[in-house]
Amino acid sequence: MIETNAIYVIVMREFKKFIREKSRLISTLARPLLWLFLIGGGMSRLVPAGENVSYIQFIFPGILGMTILFSSIFSSISIIWDKEFGFMKEILVAPVSRFSVVLGKATSGMVLSTFQAVIVLCLFPFIGLRLDPLQIIGVILVSAVLSFALAAFGILLASFYESYESFSVIMNFIVMPMFFLSGAMYPVTSMPAALRQLTHLNPLTYGIDSLKHVLLADAKPPMGPEFPLHLDLTVVLAVSVIMLTFAALSFRKKE
Image (cartoon, rainbow, N blue to C red; front, side):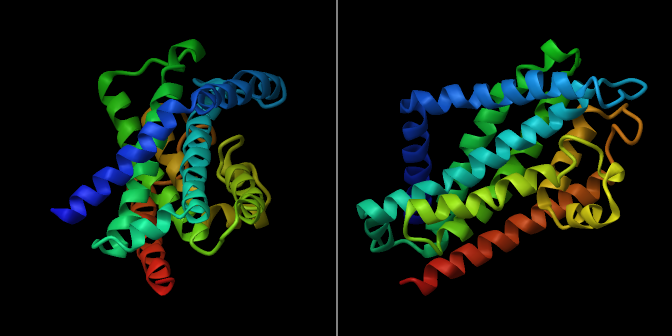
């Protein structure tokens, strides 16, 4: 019961912080709008559309993935702030396991990222997509699983750093390469062989591909899904378990 309450408190604390910070709510829509309509609109003149899907429709799952990636990874920055202001020490001395602390942080990242993904999902009528209720539920479920995996990954990284500055530098060398090597902006099959191999090692690739299964199920390759759905979900779930385990072990070592 104590462990469950600890997870609930951590989740609610992060959610209330997000709601109170109006700038984060604005950036939730600003970044996807910029990439979708400005960059996507410009690239659509250079990249040929598929038989039954436009380029903007093709990158929409990638924009959702980008929203999840940024919000999940950067939600773990709260760990750095908690370390600097002493709140993390208060959590760690509480009579709860390190695993519950990590699980609470990962769950809060999942909730916030899924919430932001749902906001971006509301843009689908403006790009000509038609989604039924089952597809919308499917997108939310896939977003939640991917958010949890990426949040756990961010927590693992944050556990090794003590200052906000050093963590943000590392993120710049991880977040953007993960995004561009995920098939979000162009099909994986169109990449050079060396880069294609790197995309296969990127968990975001499988998360975005699973979103394509839901949003662009009728699209033909290379604009549609490129991997089997069961492979996508298996990889994302495996990454969730592995990252959560290593993050919990990392926190235990810092006792």
